[in-house]
Length: 367
Image (cartoon, rainbow, N blue to C red; front, side, top):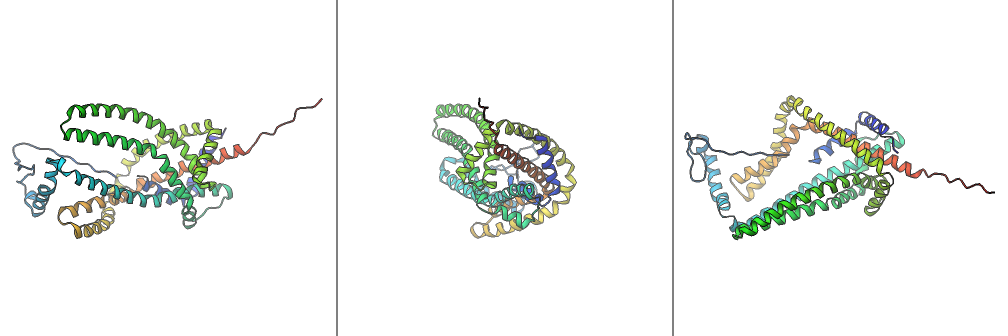
């Protein structure tokens, strides 16, 4: 049985004494996962709207920008909202564009996240072995190699169940859409009921499966990072270690679950306490977000003019704006990421040590 208290204390010591890890923790936190909200509504008799729902009495809404926005909406958006079945090809192209955008952004995030995660695992392991601390350049070199790629593939394979769930739900949604478009309301209602039932079943199974896989992942990725195993070998090696000490692993998972809940509560308190820091970071956030927004605006104006360029610029600016304004909270999240990774790295090391210690067989006495 592993010494959980010792691992937790040692991980805390590593967090506060190996401070170059904070940089990698910040990179992990910022690439781990932004938001938008919208509201609409109408009011009383003091406002008059045209046929498309735009107010025409205020000075802002009679400005050239608002007129241009209104014309753009009436020309491109209103026909789609009124007759969606005539724009199926447009929806498909939009979906393809969104998918390509997600893939590009995901690739850029992966190029930062997985080398950072690999570096943290190997830096903590090396610090435990030799007591030597590395600088950022050496740490990044520890992460920028095939091990990081293998961990990415492991995550990709682990994510297959979630991909299947999303594909099934999307398929049911498409079936419901075309059923309504063709007037098959009975089939649509049946499909909706089936979709709701399947959603609850899938979510329940999915939650249990992903909890188990998240625990196994801690062993898979460390087998790939620390033992330089191939992808299939990492799965086998991680499963062997987990199977041999599953009680210790499950107990550590429960302990980290409790710590995670406590961190969530502390995080909500910190979110409120850091409001002055958000105010201070507001102007730098605008300046940083303005650079990619301006680039996106300039590129978009080559292909399309009008409000579309402003919309694209705003979409590009939002992630940069919130990344900067919430940087203090992200930094704290990086501490937790380092601590959690260190706990599981030390757990992996101790379980591996216990596996290596084989009991000595004493021969039975002879007559």
